[in-house]
Amino acid sequence: MSTLTILSVTLITLALLFYSAGVWAERLSRYLRPWHVLCFWTGFTFDVSGTYAMHLLATGPFDLTEPHTLTGQIALWL
Image (cartoon, rainbow, N blue to C red; front, side):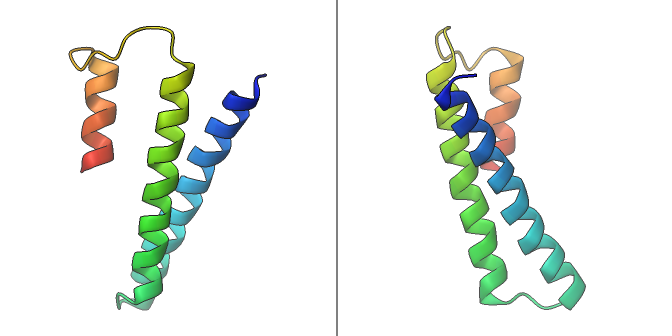
């Protein structure tokens, strides 16, 4: 497995962990605190970085008309 693949998987996994920590901590406390927001934005940063690393691994051109690309972009920007 290439270093870039390992980096991509690590970044996306960190995104999942930070997103989950921020969302669940807010849900359980029932109050949005600054560190919840920080967790969310840290997760978003890892998500964008992991997505970019996967883009570097892709061999085909970037095409927004393909369903996989389109749904991925929509999910990222929602």
